[in-house]
Length: 273
Image (cartoon, rainbow, N blue to C red; front, side):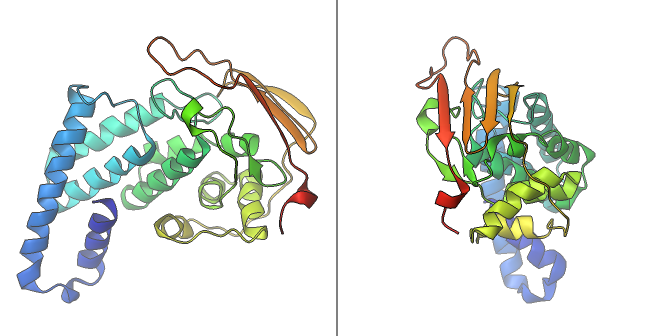
């Protein structure tokens, strides 16, 4: 629904003459069916009754704010605008103190989904010019510089136990944060990906491209130990060696941990240029 509705809205606002009158009602009726399904099966069950078990799970679900923003613009129902506010309030309330965003319930952040969160919030921000959406992104400013190594690698051992995997930084998320906040270390995280020939294609890159800003970066911090409030434990970096512990109490009924302390050794010279 998200990409299709977004494309439809771009079409009717920028090139309305391309849409045949015979197709306009047909497409709008079909979109309305999908929007109502999203509203009833996700929106109400998540935020009104909690029956869906959600209201605690951003990630792909962040697309909900774009669905509902466009639905409010096209159909005019206030119930859609109410859903946007509910989701933004949820996002802002669950940001960890050093910029992480929950994966699910009380679970730690997952780097891949943090990128998705940032890109989707920024796309909504383009439409709505929402101070709350901008503030949410600003509150994540510490996240990428903590997670991304100077070699471009990202640890996965503090992720939820079913999401552990190694990866490299991608430019979309940190470039958006850098553009909105002016933070040079977020820009460095984005540049690491671009310098190593890892620009991304696809929808998320399209959404991120409009935020790109020419600005200088600065080296990531080194030789430190910090208490990372995102995982409620120490995190450290000394040259190519880094480590972090995972001391967050997930609470009863949550899947536990398979890593309590993880480390990463990644020399810049060992990474493909």
